[in-house]
Amino acid sequence: MATQLIFDTIPDGNDPQNPVRIYTDGCYDCFHFGHANVIKQCKEFFKYTYIVVGVCSDEDTVENKGKNLMNQEERAECVRHCKWADEVHIEQYNLFNLYSQYNLYNLSK
Image (cartoon, rainbow, N blue to C red; front, side, top):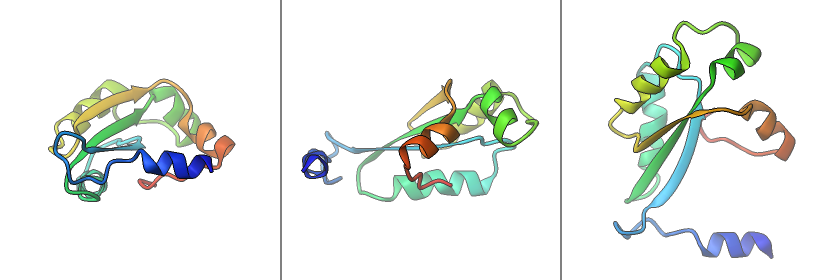
């Protein structure tokens, strides 16, 4: 029943005053066209969308993927220049553990 209540509150994506907010995240080290394409695909899910992009912190990426070539501020700045990203945040918690703990699915992985 809770799932039905959640889905009843999601906008249909046809109202420019009430866009669907989509969250995607990643490390985005050496930002390239593949990264931009993921954000673009999120933007195209609905007619009116607002894309929030999370950039994993240096600590999280080193712990889970290895050494970065760019620091978190540089990676976030690259994502901010992507025309499909509406909002960019550096994530300060371990997203990898969060997804595992709650068995969540992330469309961008």
